[in-house]
Length: 102
Length: 138
Image (cartoon, rainbow over all chains, first blue to last red):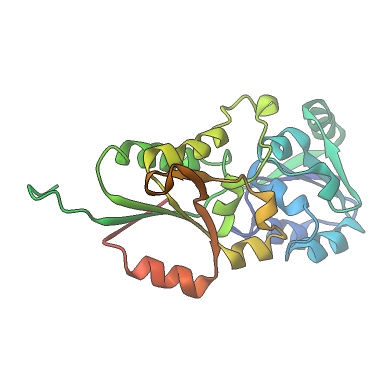
C-alpha cells in the first residue's frame, strides 16, 4: 500500500510532522500544507530530520501556502518538490489512501 | 476603564503562524480596536508568531485575505513597541531581514520615522512581560 500523508501543523507548534515521519513507511509520500509548509525551509532546527526523511520518502510542499506566508521557494530544502493544487489532486489519486495528520 | 482614565500597560502575545488558524488575524483586529482606548500597547511575536511578520506574503493562491500590510498601519494607531523574540527567529532560520520593516512617526522629534520593531532575547522579553498590567495571548 502506498500512502499519501498530509501534514498541516507547524512542527514548532505540534508534533504531527514528527509522528508522521516516524510512522510513514519507505516510499510513502508526505505533503506539507497550511502551517506545515514552514517545515520545508532549510536552516531551521527541523531541517536535518526532514532531509534524512526525504531520502526514503517523497516529500512535497504546497506552493500557494508558501506564497501566502511569504516563504521563499529558493530556501526550500533540496529534495522537496513544490507542487500546486492540481498536483495535490493528482497525488491523492496516485496513492491508495490518504492519511491526514491533524 | 476608571474615571481617572488610568493608563495600563497592555501586551498582546502572538504565537501562531498566519492563515492556518484564525488567531493572527483576530489578534490584529483586537489590537486595532483596542488602540481606540488610550492604553500603552505593545505586541510580542514569539514561536510561530514570528511568521506573521514575514515579508512578501501573497495569498492569491489560497483564496484568503492577505492582512500583512495592516501591520504597517500599527504606527498610525500609536502602537510603537513591537518585540520579536530572537530565539524564535533563530530556531526558524530567520533574521530581521526576513521581516517587514515597521515604523512610527515621532511627533516629539519633528515626525521622524523610527523603528517600532525590536528583536529582543528571551530574558529581555520575559522582563517586559512581567512589567505588564495585562497580557493577552493569541
